[in-house]
Structure formats: structure tokens, C-alpha cells
Length: 238
Image (spheres, helix red, strand yellow):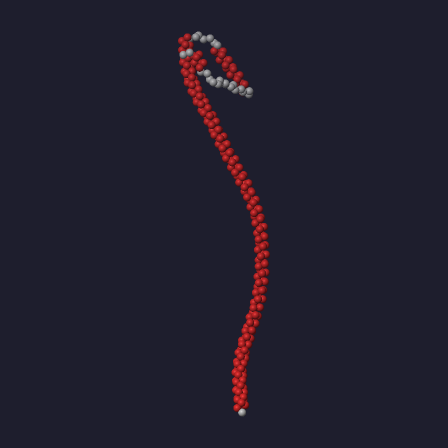
């Protein structure tokens, strides 16, 4: 396997930047100075020439290559997992964006529908309110007209009632006068009736007397006629 090719394939999408922490305090400066001194002493010690051991060097190099290869393979596996995870996350994000756009469209359509319904309902309510205002105004006018008509009718009824009371009083007075007149007339009639009864009795008495007188007169006349005939007969006989 070509190490350079494998190394080129393993490329991070975003470089990792290590930030160096800075400490401007006195303790930080002293620590940095001490660290530089230790590094300098280690460098001096490393520069001391030693007798090389070829087998040890090759063995160490072989171990380092194996370790580097293992690390590389692990990094590659991690890179593939990261890339797969990234692709999955990208797909999920794209699906989420598509779903968000679709949901937003649904929400916008629902909002528009609800807004249209609310606007229509608002217009209906405003129309009903206007109708109620008109009806209330008409009701108040009708109520005022009814109250005025009621007052007029009550005044007419009161006037008619007073008129009826006056007429009743007049009729009652007339009836009382008529009753007195009729009572007097009845008394007069009773008096006349008694007088007529007396007149009838007197008439009957007069008629009886007249009849008697006529009978007596007839008797007298008869007697006179008979006497006259006797006288005439006597004269003729002589």
C-alpha cells in the first residue's frame, strides 16, 4: 500500500486549529521561561552523539510504521464513519429543510385559510352589528312612537272616560228626572183612574136614575094618554 496515497486520501474537511493560550501574568512568564530552559537542556542532551544500533533502529522504525499504519487505518475508519455520519446528517438536514418548507407552506396555507375565514367572519359580525344597530335604532324609534301613541291613546281614553262619565251622569240625572216625572204621572194616572171610577159610579147612578125617571115619565105619559083618550071618548059619547 502506498503510504503517500493513503495519506492524501485522509483529508479532514476542516483543519483543526490549536490555539495557544497566553498568560501575561508574572507566574505565566516564569513558567514559560522555565519551560524554554528545560527544552533547551533536552535539546543539548539529544545533540550528544551516540553510537547507532542499526537493528534497533529498523525494529523501532518497523514498530513505528505498524503503529502508524494502525493509527492510519483507525483514522480512515473514523473518517469513513464521520463522512457517512456527515452524509446522513446532510440528508437528514435536507429532508428537514424540505419538510420545513412543506410545513411552512402548509402553515402559510392554513394561516391564509384561517385569515380568510376570520376576515369573512369579521365581515359577517360587522354586518350583524350594523344590522343590530339599525334594528336598535328602529326599535328605539318604534318605542318612542309607541310611547307617544300610548300617551295619545291614554289621553283619548281618559277623555272618552270623562265624556262617558258626564253622559252617564246626565243620563242618570235624566233618568232620575224621568223617574220623578213617571212617578208623578203614575200618581196622576192613579188619581185619574180613581176619578174615572167615581165618574163611572156616578154615571151608572145617573143612568139608573135617568132610567127610573124615564120609566116614571113613560108611566106618566101613558097615564096622561089614557086620561086624554078617556076624556075624548066621554066627549064623543055625550
